[in-house]
Image 1 (cartoon, rainbow, N blue to C red):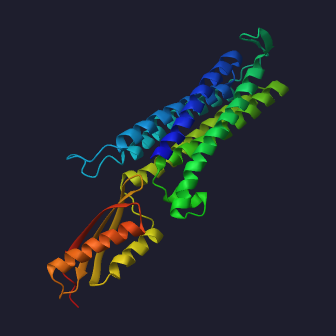
Image 2 (image 1 turned 90 degrees about the vertical axis):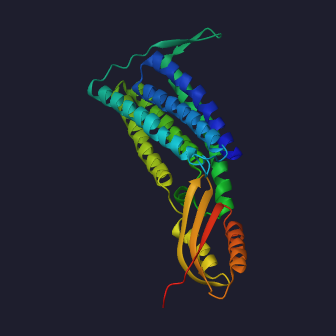
Image 3 (image 1 turned 135 degrees about the horizontal axis):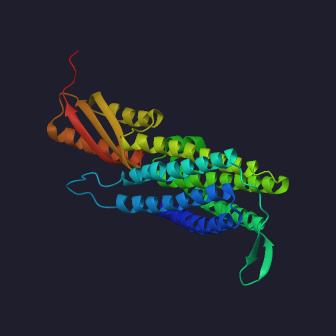
Length: 319
């Protein structure tokens, strides 16, 4: 949890500063790509605020109305990030870019005076400086997010980023990592678009860059929404990770039949396990209770994400 929070705070600082600088660049040059990047960074900043809220609420203790705690809060707030922030920002960016393509505005040189230094420079240089600075900031934020994701990969023996994306329940770190990667890509696209429009005098490059940034944001919104939807509706452990837990119970001494076995995430790295188990008929109640306690402890030792285990003794199926 502490690792996820530090990743989000790093991204919040970077994106907040970048959003202000990009907006200044847009007001000086009227660049469509810079406006899209402003939308992008504002949405990124709001993203971090929502993720911090999710981290805060997910840490609340269980109570009568939420007997398994508030762990799914992170899934909910990350889902809001996808729908309210990236979806809207992506749509507005794409729409603005499309309008700029259909109704291009002439590229105007313009100048800007740097505060304190009292030096006048071409306004487009402000865009270059801001976008290059944004890329540098995003590299730092991305590195922090990658470190958080790497710790998870090492902890769970995941061998690739693809496997981590498919299996992780830590949507906070996953969102920050993906968002920082896309932010770097968006800044790069904007930089190319602004440069080409400046060199050629054709505003279409800047407009196309704005449109592409919008499409990229909307694509990420869909991917993030899908990632959180699977956890919100109650996803189980992947089959290959659930299989050894199922075998552990089925092969336990005194177990005659495993009638049902289920796993579900109820928070970040918090798994609930339920099992209907038929024990040997000659075992008394006390012995069965001892076996159940031993199985619960073994499951939690085998998979540290398992926080709750409920085993229900059953009658064996008739042969």
